[in-house]
Structure formats: C-alpha cells, structure tokens
Length: 411
Length: 152
Ligand code: SF4
Ligand code: SF4
Ligand code: SF4
Ligand code: SF4
Image (cartoon, rainbow over all chains, first blue to last red; front, side, top):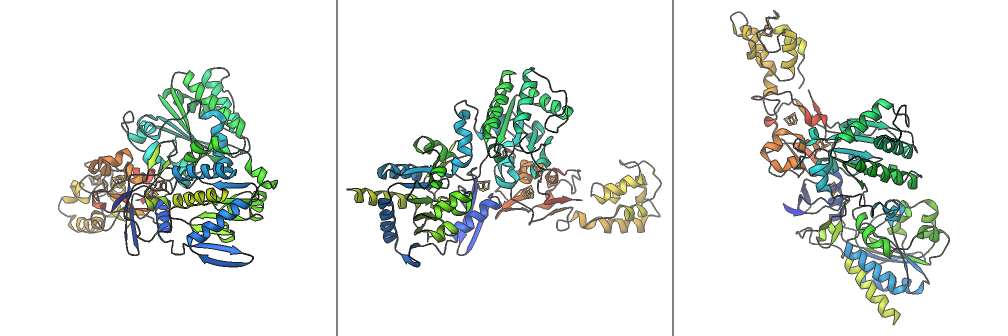
C-alpha cells in the first residue's frame, strides 16, 4: 500500500492508501465514493482522443486532436472556457492564461451555487476556519441544508462530529450536533437537534435565532414549524458552546433565496460572536476543487456566462472535466449542444460523446501531481505513487499544449 | 445469531434470588441474550441439581463468545465507508489512537477497518461486548448513519 490523496470529493483525504496489482485495486481508508472513483479512474481503458466531423468519428493522436481544438478556439470570435472544478490549481491557472490569450470568457461550475455564496462577501467577513480547527474546537456543529452522509462521507468522522481534538477530549460526547433540513436525513441520526423546516423557511429561522441570541426579540412561539421549546434549547446550547460551526450546503445556497439566506447566516454568526463566543461558517460542496476554482477564478472569471451562453454570445466552448450537457439546466445545455465543443476530461458522459474534439485525461489522484484546495481553502498537494502504468495524458499538459498551439496560431 | 431471552429464562432457577447483578432471572436472561452475562454468573446455577440446565445454557451462549459468531452485523450494501465506526469504537481508539482523531485506521489491530470503500469487522473478538469485558457498548451502531451496523 502507498499513501495517496483522494480526489473523490472536496475533502481531499490525505490519510488514505491504495495499491494496484494487475487488475486488482485495493484501498485503505477511502470511503465508498473515493474507492469507486479510484477504480473508475484506473480503468480508463477506453481513454483516447477523438475528432468528430459531419457525422464521422475518428480516433486520432493527441497531437491531431489538439491541433483541431486550437483551430476551433481560434476560429470562434468569442469562445467560452468552462468547467474546471475537477482540475488542479495549476491547470486552472493555465486555463485562465489560455482564456486571456484568445480573449475567451472563463467560467466555472462553481458559478452555479457556491461562488454565489462566497462572493456574497462571506469570504471577506472571515467567517471561515480550517477543518482541523473544527476538529480541535468545534463544540456546536450545525449542518444546515447539507447532508454529509450522502455526499461528503468522511466529513463527520474526520473533522466535525466524531473525532477527539485538543478541546474536544471526548469526541462526540464533547460536542452538540444539529441538523436543519427540509426532510429527515441520515445525518440526523447523530444529531441532538433535528430541525425539519419547510422549503424556503431558512431565512426566517436564521433571523429568529439571531434575534434571540442578541436578546432583540426572544423566541416565544413556533418558527418555521419548529416549537419555541426546541429552538430555545438549541440557542441555549449554542450560547453554552465556546465554538459554533455551521456547515451550509446546497439546501441553503440553491433554494432560490440565496441572498436572504446568506445574509441571515452571516448575521447569525455575527450574533453568536457578539454574545462572546466563537462562530464560523463553512460551505459544503462535492466537486473536488470547487474551492480552488473559487479562489483562482473568481477574479479572472466572467460573471453571468450561462445567461450569455443562452443568449448566443459564445461561438465555441472548451469544457474541462464536466458533463455540462447533463449537469446544466436545460437552456444552457441546449446552447452548449448547438456550438462546437472541445471536451477535456475523463471518458464517458454525453458531453464527451457529443464534442467535436474529445481528449481524455488522467485523474489527478493517479498522476499524483499538482494541488487542489480543500473545502476549507487549505491547499492539498497530491502524492506521487505507482498507480497504473498506463495512464492517459495529464490535463495540465493538454491545456498547456493547447495554449502553446493557439499562441502560435495567433502570430 | 440471536438468542431468545425466554428460552434462556426457562433454563434459569427462576427464583429471583438477587444473587446476580441483574437481580432478577428475567433481567439476567435478557442480558445473557446480549452476551453481557454468562450462565456461570448465576451462583445457584452452579449448585447441585442444575447441571443439565447449566450445560444447555453454556451450549446456547457459546457461539456468542466465539469470534466467528457475532452479536454485530455489518451490511456491506448499506455501508458508505464513512469511518464513523472506526473513529467511535473505544477499542480502535485504544489500539490505534490516531483513529480517535479522525484518521483512517491502517494497523489491522482495530475492530473495524475501512477497506475498498467499505467497513469490515476484522477483530470481532476485541469488541467490548464480548468476554472478558462484556460491556453493553453499542456506539458503533449508534453513529452508523446508514444503519449498516446492527447489534443484538
Ligand atoms: S470523503 Fe471524499 S476525499 Fe475522502 S475518501 Fe471519500 S471521496 Fe475521497
Ligand atoms: S442469580 Fe440466577 S437465580 Fe438468582 S436472580 Fe440471578 S439469574 Fe435468577
Ligand atoms: S459507520 Fe456504518 S456506514 Fe460508516 S463505515 Fe461504519 S459501517 Fe460503514
Ligand atoms: S460495540 Fe463498542 S466495542 Fe464493540 S465494535 Fe461497536 S463500538 Fe467497538
């Protein structure tokens, strides 16, 4: 077994190990998702480069595919470079350079939700803290609209709920756990406070909690269908805890009420701080480098690209590591399907099958080079190991070569 | 392996003599079904006249004491490999302290190990429900969010 770093989700677990012996792949410590990701990354038997033209499909060398891709990018008046949340920071930086060279728009899958949350100045308000601090100090843990049991399997065991830490001598016994969601979730099994609220009631509940904590207007009756007794119990426990951490997920970010929800969250954190205790908020997300994308690309990125895509502004697109034709809302997917696409990513999916040029690349977990940003913005470098000897090209190299080709073409 | 407390009860002296810790025969039978007490913990049962009952009871509980037959079941299909069981199990934390701080267990000395994406019980005999500890621990079951762990 060799130490590796998992790229299965944004936790980027670095305490895990793997071994490949012929067809046999084994791992230690990887969750189900991570292990499946490892297997599918290794078994890229059908990895290749493909060029499709007027109904014909040809498997080509990577050089030919890149040439064709550069032609598409150079011909289009304004291309869009999209995706990137599965790419390393280094590849993202290269992508931004590429966009600048050809005057392309650059945008990422993060713009669908998470970035919205972060550019809502949460980041600049210093609401975040790293997960190791949470393990050592987080006394009141509140999952709000996030369900780690479903998508970030090791989040509770590695950082937020179960482990012992400096000021958490008894692990779970030293913490209080709350879950707020619109339905009963598996994560609630671990919780002392289980709050099932109607969709869209988040802001109302956040405001009520803040007002009570600040002593502005005490909770006296039901809020969002939750009894005053339950809510007051929760407030008591928050006030008792030296450090409260709220992990907010898509339930809070993508519920249509983003603006109000996030300012409510910010106010709640500030209220707890005013009451003399530590409080932090951290986003929950699944795509491995959603935070790297956020950090690197927010400034460089163009806003509002999906709307502009639908409006027909872009004449071609490079999609990196995302099955956008499936993942995006109907109109955006349709708009993508109607322009020449270049796909760079793992084999499989509709975007890969429909693209004018497809170039399959190896997963960072196997290559063991480059770095990504964990959920808490901590940089995690990949570890080199002797994965499967036969790997497709590295994404970083593909984007770099593409950049070289278009730069030459521009001269 | 599930023991029926009623069946065990019928083999006890049924005198509620209060010489055992559970104090009543029914409570004793219930604890015995969980593996928390053994037939030999009932003093009257060791006296003359109960030889056959004692032997029968020892036979019934024997599988619970062996490493193969268990009082814990782990359902692969429900397990997400989250590692909650590894991190909360007091045995795991004692033999590989890093697991108590959330790290993946790798020593193979723990009760649980997450291997190939799912948890496996590799040292069942170390579980504190079994002799010599015979504690009524069930924290792994309590914090397994997907109910993959079942204890009886
Ligand atoms: S929690 Fe995420 S990073 Fe950790 S092993 Fe599972 S998939 Fe990989
Ligand atoms: S010691 Fe035996 S007889 Fe006495 S109460 Fe307990 S089980 Fe019953
Ligand atoms: S706690 Fe349950 S789901 Fe998690 S690894 Fe253990 S058995 Fe599997
Ligand atoms: S019952 Fe307790 S000691 Fe036994 S495996 Fe579960 S957590 Fe460990």
